[in-house]
Image (cartoon, rainbow, N blue to C red; front, top):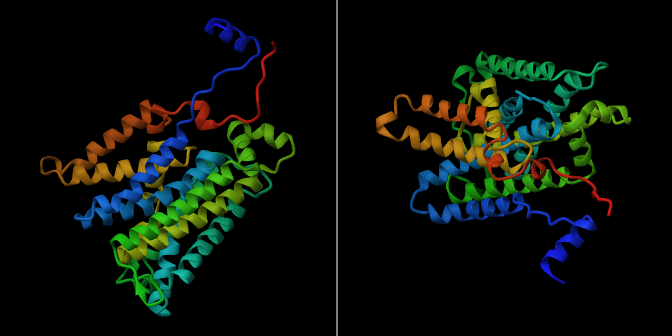
Length: 346
């Protein structure tokens, strides 16, 4: 059978050649690059420290992507869960002399989840369906109020924050910045990335996709949309709490800005810059922004006004490429996902 005849037969039977998906390939490349990073940068410990921070902040960006990219929740309160969990592990280390990671990291996740559940009960589970603006301002208000509270509370260091945080430990071993802490941060990111990916591809993920496309129609079919939103919001709070605990341990410091609107907005920018609704997009956005910030801040010629240059770059990408960096190479169909099989009549 000739090529032309075969093509005609494929068209008649409705069979189309599907393009290879790019997202799994990008995920594998990113994983390989992150695994190789500490070995490549073995002679530059300051860069390993920088990349550890990037991994921890990627967890925060991932938590926001679950809210906005998959559930349509514009949350400006992710830093609230991040910062409160960081304060909790710092206080437990200071007052109880306990910093074992098997206890403090799950505690941080529990704190983040409980805070998110409480906020969701107020913002999402009322009698009336909340608008996106109401949820955005509600989470923003929560983050701002928490920042002002700790800034004037002497028990938690007030505006100076808490410094000299007890090192995270496992048994008698204490984690300091470097290869070991990088490995912990990478393991946490990979585990919760895979969990988020499983959720996105599960039946719950199918409901989230329906919410993202047409929330009103899904509610018409009897789905309690706000309950599903509250569940994913609570899970995202747990991830943000874990991120905040790791950040406090790694930095050895936590302060009011770690739970304020500024950091929440930064998480939004990470996600939008890389590409929301993709899971890997926020990780790419965090890496790109943090590395660009490091390079610009370390360049003598532009050291005094590098934030302006960074702001212009971010503004241009968000304005002219709303789907983020991944939108340059990944199609809209692959980002949104397709469910079910389509058949054409012969």
